[in-house]
Image (cartoon, rainbow, N blue to C red; front, side, top):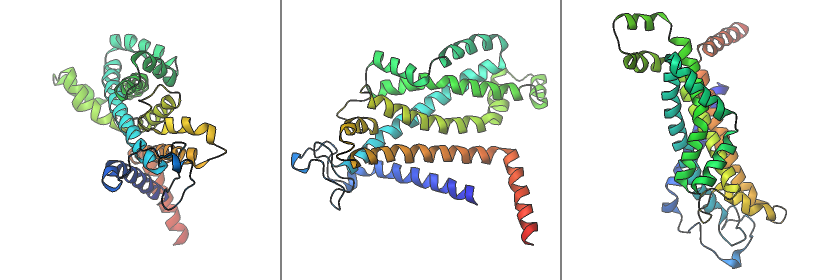
Length: 282
């Protein structure tokens, strides 16, 4: 029951943030870039729910619009890294000759922290949403490759795969029809974690000043602007930080919930606990 509530809470948070970002232009007439020096560093009020920043911009509106960038970057990076990692992981796990080549490349990339690798790529490519997606997707796909490869190694020698080989099925059919559907659970779980990590990485890059255009509100550049006002106007940094924490926490809880749902051992343990509780209160 507690896990179900946790999963519903995480889905509710993500839906609320997503709907707010999509419909922001419908219910808000204020531009996130609108500057009014007379409203500089106002504390939260009924008129400005999250207060205003050092340029008099509404922090609530900017936080909502910043979520749009983070969700787009996180979602696309998760899809790109998952697709590339799944393809290379399937190949590496199924073909021994390709395994030695692909995994040496993966090991070399994993020797560098993903954020440092993304930092170098964005610095080389230039700051834009597209370049951040390319850099983060390239930085995160080795992790997915290793996970998919490990899953393939576990299932490629089971009886139904051997039976498919004896019927003359091609390697492509075996990989896509027999192996891939049976390793979807770790792929989906890792995809949600990649989503969360990409949001954190995008915020870090924006905080360092090499993310998207500074005129575009992101949680990272909002925190970067707020750091010198943290004692004078703490709300300036609190609310963008809460946006990052809530979104990443919700994604991690959702990933844990999906992992528990796909894990047969977790299901057995849950059934045992239910039987014990029923016997105790019977």
